[in-house]
Image (tube, rainbow, N blue to C red):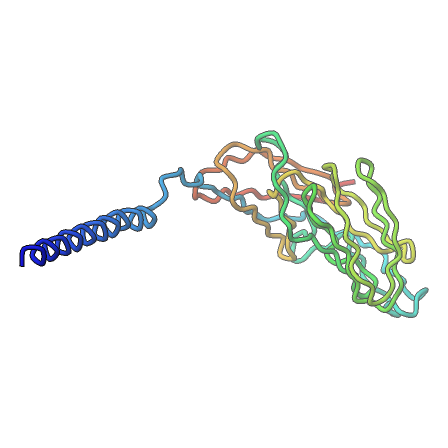
Length: 256
C-alpha cells in the first residue's frame, strides 16, 4: 500500500502545480488586455479654427461680350454668357481665397484624391480651383467635342494633350507652387480655367453667393489673400483662435 500512497501523493502535487501555472498565465493576460483598451497617452491634435466670409462686388458690373461657340457643331450653338466676371446680387464668385503668410515653412503632405477639372458644354468646370504640389490633377470630359488641354505655367512643366470624347482622364502633377496658372483649350479659344498650385490645403473658392470658408487652421495671425482673374488680389490680416470662426469680407469693384 505504501507505493500506491506515494504514487497518489505525486499525482496530487503535479495537478496542483499545473493549476498554479494555468492561473498565472491567465492572471498575466488580464492586465495586457486592460492596458490595450486604455486611452492613448500621446498628445491630442491642437485645436483649430476657421476663416469664413463673403466676397462683395461694388459698383456697376462690367458687361462682357457673349461667347460664340458655333465654330464647333459639338458645342452650344446659341450665344453663351462669359464666366470671366460673375456677380449675383452684389456677390462675386470664382475668387480664390488663400492663406498667403503666417503658416510654418515647408510643404505639407498632399491628398491622394485628385483635384478634378471637367469639360462640359465646351467649358472648364470649375473655372477656378486649387491643387497642392504633388496632388494628382485630373482633367475629364463629358463632351462630344474634341478638346486640346493646355496649361500655361511659368514655374511648372507645360504640357499639351488632345482629349477625344469618352477618353480616359488626363492625370498630371504640379511640382512647384504657382498662382493662377491658365488652363486653355487650343481647339476652343474661349475655354479658360485658373489653377492655383499650393503647398498647403488652406484655400477656398467663393461660391455663387460670394461665400467662402477655410477650415482646420492652427491658431495664429495670418495674411489672407483673395485673387480674381480680372480684378487682381486683395489682402488683409486675420487672427484665428482655437474653435472660434474668424470673419473676413473682401470688397472688389471694376475700378477704372
